[in-house]
Amino acid sequence: MYNKIWFFKSIMEQLEEAIIVADLDEKIVYINKSCEKMYGISSSSLIGKFLSDMLIVIDKDKEDLRKISQTIKDEKIYYGSHFSKRNNGEEFIVSIKIASLKDEEENKIGYVGTIQDVTLNMEFERTLKETTIELQEKNKELEQFAYITSHDLQEPLRIISNYSQLLHEKYQNTIDEETEKYFNYILDSANRMRILIKELLDFSRVGRKDAPFEKINIDKMLEDIEKDFILKIKETDAKIRIETSLPEIYGIRIRIKQLFHNLISNSLKYRGKDNPQIVIGCYDDDPFYTFYVKDNGIGIEEKYFDRIFGIFKRLYSREQYPGTGIGLALCQRIVETHGGKIWVDSEPGSGSIFYFTISKSINFT
Ligand code: ADP
Image (cartoon, rainbow, N blue to C red):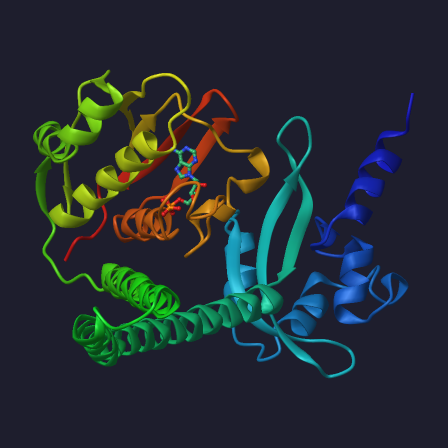
């Protein structure tokens, strides 16, 4: 069997925290390697000295020493934060805990102190906070930029589009086949650009909580969406089935509608050989509601599970499936403004399930 003292000592040597053990006379009997490293002192220089000698080292300002002594004399556990100083003069902040050490019969046999260098944690937290604020500001700037540019681009595009149309009408009867083809390229591209700009504008609007959060009855909303798709549903003989009860949620009505609209529209568009079977449901996943939209369509390869949520990211050409690749990016933004996330699970050839969560308790104001 192993030696108990050796066993515990080797555990102490692995700890990140500095450990000091003193006997009943408050004389130091052990310090671990982390303590030597933290203060730049050797164990031999401290063994046999009084705990108060070490406390003077620990507390640079020596302010709380009396409080520490009193607390441990009163048999209480001492917790505190102190400015400390290493042997090389470097200052740092520590969090200390000092408690009595007891034997198996609960008799006090000494003291044990645990010291944690919290400077690194604090610096890390501060850097993280600063970076987050910086990122949020940059994000706002970018959103503003996307909003203004897409908004301002609409006007010149409208002029290009209108005047090309007028030119086309004016010379319709005199132009040859090749020129007619050029006109069509221009009109087609201008139209595509109009759609892209509109979608970009819509995308940059989603992040700006420009409409109030309100109570939404999802059942009712889905009935309305189904009506919007009535022609497509008839044409493809699609079935939409709601398989669980659906909750009322708080959200921005037009955005939540857009979210379901995009997912259902994709399920109809990326259908397989069989008639589309779309199943919608929700489960309570406190503090979220998790909704899902499942289809029996062409499916998606696992390596594209993240990519498809990127703006203008598509897996097929416009000739194969029409679209611009903004639908799922919009869905992701909408879900994020409702405190949730969105992801997909799919098997190529069998279908896809899109899941998204909506926070029940996000601060909506
Ligand atoms: P779009 O449909 O305009 O291309 P989306 O952002 O809605 O844009 O979708 C991005 C890509 O994700 C699509 O081009 C398609 O490849 C894939 N995708 C989306 N929904 C489905 C689905 N239900 N089944 C299979 N693939 C899908």
